[in-house]
Length: 225
Image 1 (tube, helix red, strand yellow):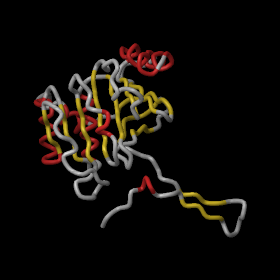
Image 2 (cartoon, one colour):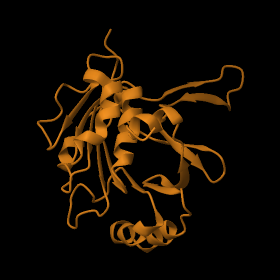
Image 3 (tube, one colour):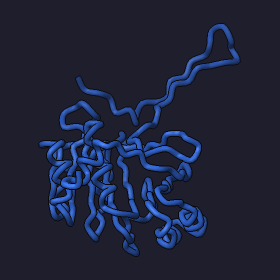
Image 4 (tube, helix red, strand yellow):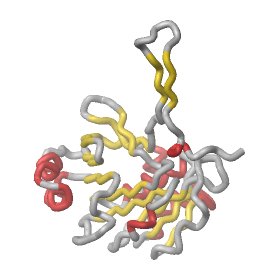
């Protein structure tokens, strides 16, 4: 069975036959990868993978790239990792099998045609912790997610100019978020308390605490149990 491209489906609208002033409208619900819980106790998700390509920049440690890869794998994505530390991916690789490919450089990507979850090889994701970000154009197209995690976003990088989402994992990244997004972003990042992260996207800004299960911790840090 071939699923339709939901990005091209219009909202459905029809009048209520009993109340002409009321109507019912169905629209595409945007969910995504669970990140954590905000200061009010509400869950926060990053909208990926999806029918539109997603480009994500993360200011922080490479551990977050492995965590995000785990959650992409859990929703049916096939993940390619381009990393300076292939050994750090051993736990994730053992759990993922052939759904994860680990490289020390950015290979030809995507390795297979991106597709919706449960169709063919499913969504394709690239997680990179190399110094140089991936080409921003890799995220162009449906069911593609490209994430770059670094401690300092390169200047004059097209990948980091207006990404679909930007995460800062610590208050010490306030200067960098300010350079990328402006003074208000720097001010908000500086308010983070230990354990909090901040998510910037066009629809708004959220401060949250990541939720990491004991099983994920074991896979992310092999040899430390």
